[in-house]
Length: 180
Image 1 (tube, one colour):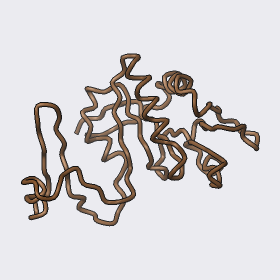
Image 2 (cartoon, helix red, strand yellow; image 1 turned 135 degrees about the horizontal axis):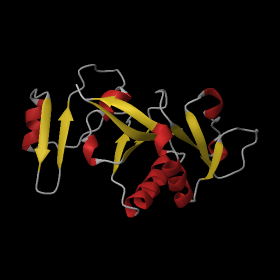
Image 3 (cartoon, one colour; image 1 turned 180 degrees about the vertical axis):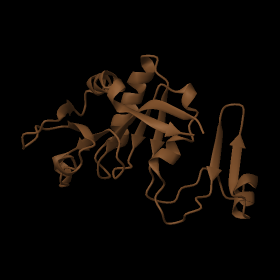
Image 4 (cartoon, one colour; image 1 turned 180 degrees about the horizontal axis):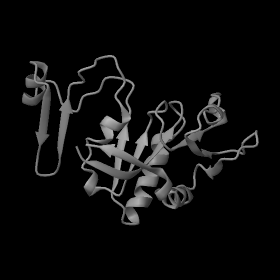
């Protein structure tokens, strides 16, 4: 077993708050600055990377526990979750990355896991903020001023450079130990 230490920062919020939009822009900024960024998304529903009728789909449906799709451009490994109905573990999922080829990993979701997170908070959604009940939240990206005094860093939701700067300034403090 090898342990790797890599910066990991998450983005959490209710659906429809703008996490993916923010992440897409921040990844572009960080990539433009020369960083190799990994992305892990927690999906709350079933998803498929394969297409019904294709050979790999049919073989997986026939009972293959792991299916690797490979081409000249990319490859993807699909693994059947042996614990159906149970959410995946953040650390186990992070260990699946080729961490030696990354500078940091940005995570979307896994809001119940204990790791450094930025909350995307839009009061217009009507959802209560997560940060008062989650000590793992290190900043709030929002489109308004926070109504309550908070010791957290408040980031402008639409200023992707500032969000990227914040992440880079915190890299030493947001490292997770990943056993692979």
